[in-house]
Figure 1 (cartoon, rainbow, N blue to C red):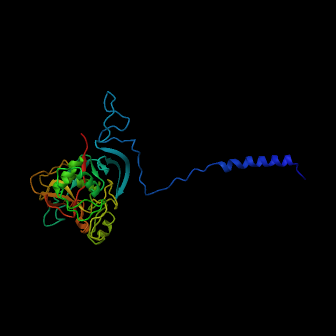
Figure 2 (figure 1 turned 120 degrees about the vertical axis):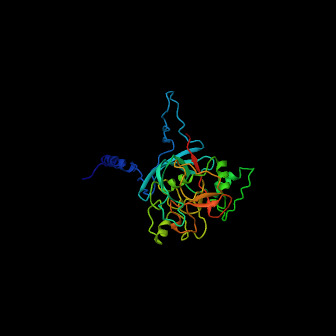
Figure 3 (figure 1 turned 135 degrees about the vertical axis):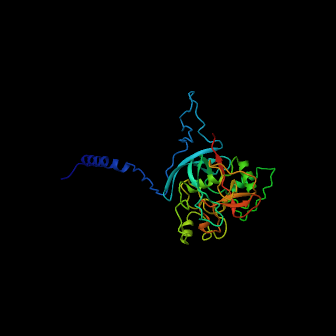
Length: 329
């Protein structure tokens, strides 16, 4: 049966009305499933730090806003890290002067040192003892050369005399002595960590040989370590760009190996009489502590509890630093 032209037009209009909504509806983009990305909180939701109120809270009857920002730092985010059997959510701050990222290491009590007989002939890591470390900030990487140069260039009255072996702004500074490291930290408004702080930060809550677990004493230890640091089997015999290896549970890179790192402490033959409050062991001895592990060594020399000494005036291509910062009281 023939349809009139008006009838046909009417039917076409009805069909267009039925189709139009489906065509014009916008589909929401599929959310990216990035399983490697850690959870973060935006910087404007600044969390409390050691009893400091979070944003919007007050700490006095007058209703004044507490100093929730750490002087010289800007809160960046919260990030969750997993290493071995430990998982932590860490607050990350940016140091305003150097633009380096620092992890807020929440304080606690840990067992420092290693059992007697583990390392002979000198039991420098004994006796094992409990140390209570207050919260502090520590750089997420070894100090890169770019940050060293930025601060060093601003100090006009000091000859630094660094004897770096390799020049790359992202490589760790090396070839510096203990006095150089300490002077740089002072110029940047930072400091060297105590060796108790260093070991506490390196362990990341573990009691094992390494931040990720115990070793076996076999060559396979080197293969596992290669994922966390630069040692003799993967470094090529020189210091490498910082921050490329897996971090520990505090979000810290290269704690086990790249260059060794100066600490504030004088070296003692053992832990008898050393501080148990996380502070540095002070004294007039010329030998100072350095920690971590080196790019030319095996994994067995890079354990969390091992400690080494070097005269404060000597510069070596295998020693650099990782700056720290004390939280305001």
